Image (cartoon, rainbow, N blue to C red; front, side, top):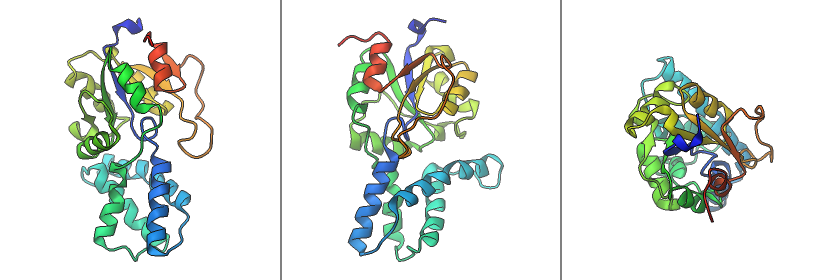
Length: 238
């Protein structure tokens, strides 16, 4: 099916639109300096993110009730502060640190690329981040979304099919009229299985390794180096 049928682009956010790791490292370093403490901020950021999928799985299995990502992030954070010997933080400091996920910095191409893509498509996040998180993130970073689509609206986290199908339904479109844009092949594969089109954008610096995850050639409908390149590959003009 031709890509000219695509009317909307929905975007993974953590890693694809914003630099979660670099943003958390910078904030943890600043907090440690203010407190006169030492912490391996890179290891802290990686451990926080590593708890993300297991925490969502606990919700899927019924071990936890439905919780917003803010609440899951806080559960993970409290454990990390113990593990890293940083229990000095009081409730107000913990809450502010947890909300760093509302203050993540966009990749350098994100705002310009999204602005270009918005000329021809409806654009929106499709993230496991909760609605308020995505709204605050967009406000701070100047992300020009047409609307905000959060897993919170569907009470299903990606890669559950209900999230992809729910996004298409809210947009009034068939799944094949919507393209998921992400730097995570697993997310794109799940969207493809739900009938969406797929756009891969490389973010080799997401995990601090300089390497992108492997995928098969031609596995996705479009591959690009960044959002500006994605706009060009989808037929946008300068």
